[in-house]
Length: 190
Image (cartoon, rainbow, N blue to C red; front, side, top):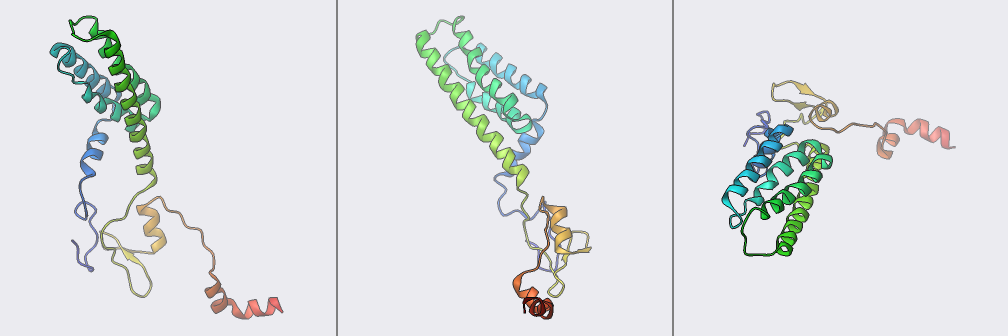
């Protein structure tokens, strides 16, 4: 935890690192060939292990990668197709359940993956819209300038614009209008 006189460090100023690991994983799982390779690997292992060991839970990784990096346009087809590939394996296995059971299971997997893809895409959209400032910001008690990690002082507007997606629109509040332009305001109203 930084002291009030030390500049904030985004790498160490974390109140909770629980969300960092999934987001870092998603950031590294960006290329479409990674999603296809992961899907093929899970399908191949699923086929090799047979009908009694179901690895289809691992379909969440390529679906999440597609939803995070390319949105629902890529994630939804993947979420719908991967369970159906597993259903095709059923014709090659000697499983003790019926086609109806397998079809219902496939439909359930597809629904869960679609919901997961929508939630992941929504999370990504929120992550793009919101960038949080964490830690303590060293701010001047008089002029309200903020010191960055390099020790340079910036106005609040410049600092927040460079660190977030915030943009400012300036105006004058009623108190400042009266304080600074009271003479003009009284003349124009009378």
